[in-house]
Image 1 (cartoon, rainbow, N blue to C red):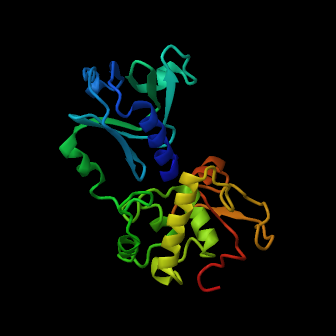
Image 2 (cartoon, rainbow, N blue to C red):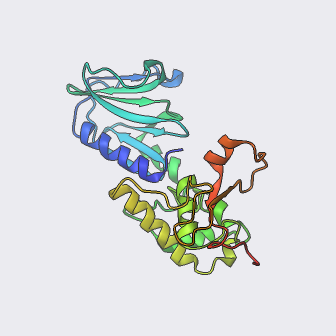
Length: 260
């Protein structure tokens, strides 16, 4: 699943292609919005919050979420698309470009004054201008018994972390993913680490994983093979897809389990 840095970079690309431009056409391939026509609307801004992306005109905010497989790509008008046309769920056109959202998990058209309702329940955005480490820590501390590996995925605590970066953050702080939030040695430092990692990934891509996806490969600190576990999930060990998509990767030596 695309994480906060991917959505942040996607917003930047769409901003460069669309912001300040007049739409010459729109094609919403979603039944609920099939009749929406944004022709002659000017794109005033493009922004992201956590894993949510917003393309705004003076009258509406187009809200999209990539979910598991979604992506946005831009093409010069007339250029062949690099993904199957049948997977396109939204097309926005200007005189010069076509911005195409493929396999988007969510597409909706909101009034500008409704946009805040989509993100009101979310924690502070790790890549947002109003990032607040204090608020993120406060939200995490509400459930001190929850494993930190699950708490980091909860967008109500802090927005933008997915499976890749929860593994990386726990690895960098030497915290076992099953450690209860209340038992994390320095929760403030861990949240600051999350902000540092996401910021680096967004502004100096690509992020090269230290733990994620490195099953059975040596830990870069101690040489112990990295392992992957499904945290809070009952999928069998043989379910390789589940391990790859939802498993959390860690070093059993550098990140000892609570009580060891």
